[in-house]
Length: 364
Image (cartoon, rainbow, N blue to C red):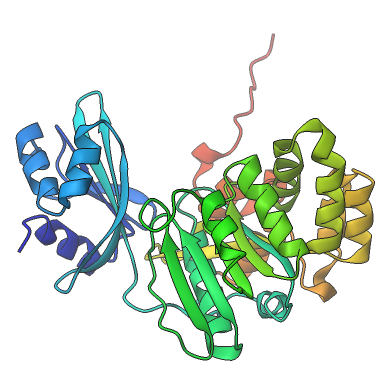
């Protein structure tokens, strides 16, 4: 048994989201958003290297010794499945191990609103799930793929880096491909996928103009594309896609979004009211004719007002989601304040006065 399993088992049993290993520090776990040290000695460079080498293949050892960071999945019947990032830093090597749930969550398990299922009723277009690193985008996408797998008769091709949740084909055929293992890049995987009779293509990250362009092509040619970006709102997502394109293609990108974008789900994880977990808060944009008109007119900055008044279509701003959850006493008021865009309306709920802006009462 690899010795590192002891730390992974402890982290999973504690309900943490990540385990961090670094030279000169004890192992640490991220629990409900906070980083907490495990009661253990500081790890030396030799000790940490020997722990990590036990779970690497010979090829991975060669890549890491050549100076490359590693992203891979570690699966052990004793401790379960983890996403691993192995890297080098000033004081030596380090690793972050993301805990993968043993079962794929359903949309209802994640409290995702009905509009998400409505997005998945489309046969063509693009759906974007966005948010900062560690906000649960992969979990949301896994639940969406699971819904399609159980309810539609599709050929679903996923491009992931690395593969986290493993899907077993049900109503659909699910083909999962890992960047760096099965394909060289997301763009190369998309080129291949278009020759493999897909109905649905999941792109783990729209990280460059080439990948974005190929995802657009897939959506335009009759496929349903699911993708992610590291943006924190619907408006920033649209801006990022258009800004990523060369100057001569920006207008074309706006036309594509107006015609083929189905919706944007932007999410943040906020601490629950009891402090024992975190809950996904969602900003949701549905591409209605009014929003498509603003995209074509390059008036994306006006979209938030439509989200605010678009509850009947399933839309909401992040601040609306936070306020609803706060009034229902589902999330921590201080965390809601931290994540809010318009913080003034959340000030009256704050319990920690140090978070509030300080008023200078000095008289000159």
